[in-house]
Structures are given as structure tokens and as C-alpha cells.
Amino acid sequence: MRLVTRDMGDAAEVNAPDARQQFRDAVLLLASLLAIGTACFFAAIWAVDWLVTRIPPETEAQVFSSVPPETLIPLKQADPSGHPAWRVWQDTLERLRIHPAVPRLDYRLALVDWDQPNAFAIPGGIIAVTSSLVQAVGEDRMAIAMILGHELGHFAHRDHLRSLGRGVVIGLLISTLLGGSDFGLLGNMAVDLVHLRYSRKQEEQADLFGARVAIDTLGQAEGFDRFLRQLAERDQLPSWAYMFSTHPDPKQRIQALETFIRNYRSE
Image (cartoon, rainbow, N blue to C red; front, side, top):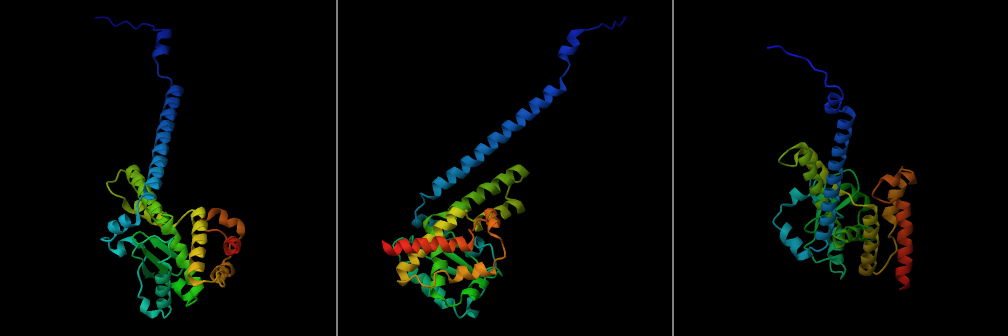
């Protein structure tokens, strides 16, 4: 049998794959998948935010009552017996918790070992404060009331549950992208980071909530800014750097609180 090679002419050019078209199709497919993934992500975040605002404190208490505190606190706990001021912190919390605006939870203080002065609202009613914060504030009851009132503000606004839910979403997303069956290291890191940080707006709202609760409970506003002024003196960041931080500039926080307290007293 004789093989004959024929010239297909223009037909061969029509049937030949177009590299540029294939590239455009691939880019379009990738962009579509990215858009769908982004939409799903923000839909999940919106669903979390919608859901947590509808979880009553009683349900939160039931859900987290059986969870060991050490699994919720991402820092090593410390022994508070070495801090004489600890009793003042506990007493102040007991006085603040009965304020009508504070959600009804079984609030507990937990001391964590960290060299940064900070405090965290942990689901279930745990307020974790760092050892360096207790050392810096001491027995200054007004400063303690402002700090604990701030964290109670996160509970009242459900910020702690919102951040935890967002952390779980991010962890699941990372796990899915990496093809793992669990969170893995990156997923756990994402949950921890989101769990400890709130938006600037949430921090500002918690400041104002804390001021209102502290003033109502202690019957005074003098000394509300002492700890913030200490932070401002220690802080070496320029004001513009707070554009990249969830916490407002301490000086701006003081100004906002001064305005709020002045208006609150005049009501």
C-alpha cells in the first residue's frame, strides 16, 4: 500500500491549537476560580458575623463551659500568687460584671506569661491579662477598671466570637488550599493571630464601653488616662505607623476618651 501525503492547506491551520487562546482560557479559568473563592470566603465571613451576634451569652457559656481554659488561651498561664495586685484585679472585675450593659457570663481572670502588656477576651468569659500588664498597672483601680471594661466591651459586642469564627474560616481555607485534612501549623497560627486581634473600630468601641462601665462603677473618671499615657511614653512608633495597626494611636485614644467622658458627664 502506498502512503500519500496530502496538503491540508487552511484546514490544518484551523485545527491547530492556538497557544494564545489557550493562555487566555487558562487565565480566564484561574480568574473565575479566584473570584468564586473570594466570594465564598467573604460569604463565610459574613455568615460568621451574622451568626455570632445572635448567640446569647447563655449559649456561649454552655458551649465553652466544658472546654479546658488552656485550649482557649494561646499563651502559657502563670501563677498569680506572686502578684500582690492580683486581688485588686479580681475585686474590680467582680464590681464591673454586675453593670447592666455587661453580658451575663461566668467571668474569670487568667494570668498569662508574656513580656508585652496586653489583655484578651477569651470565649466563655475568660479575661487573660499578661504578667507585664499587671506589673505595669499595679493596684491602680481606675486603670484596671478601664482595661477590664475594655475587654468586657469585646464580650458585649461579640468581638471575641467573631474573631474566633473568622480564625476558623481562615484555618479551614488554608487547610483546603494545602490539601490537608486538618488545620495544620499554618491553620493554627491563623486562628491564634485572628483570635488575638480586632479591628480598629472594635478597639475604639471597646474603649468607650470600658470608660462608661468604669465611670458608672467607680463613680469617677479621674485617672482614666494614666495607663494610656504610659503606653504613649513607651511607644516609639510615629502616628502614621498606626495606619497598619488594629490599635489606635494611644494619643488618639486619649483624645477620643476625653471627648466621650466630657459628653457622658454632661448627659
